[in-house]
Length: 84
Image 1 (cartoon, one colour):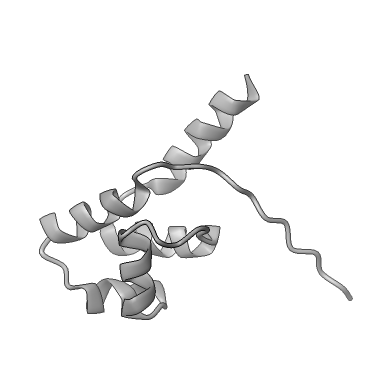
Image 2 (image 1 turned 30 degrees about the vertical axis):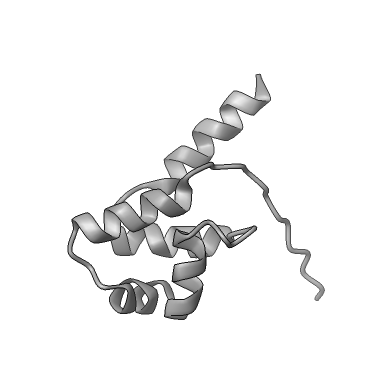
């Protein structure tokens, strides 16, 4: 069986900065957050510095869990706004 992967592209300006601010405000180390999200610390730094051009939704979901915040709600809000 062949599976097709569907990619959703949503522009969320400042997402990397918000991730960094949340991580720091909760006193979480980059190493811990990266491990929880199943990524390298270097990749987390790329996201936080806004160098990452795209972010898989699964990665965003894992970051949401690690930081205990609902980024998915932000994605849905942007999509709803774009649909109008």
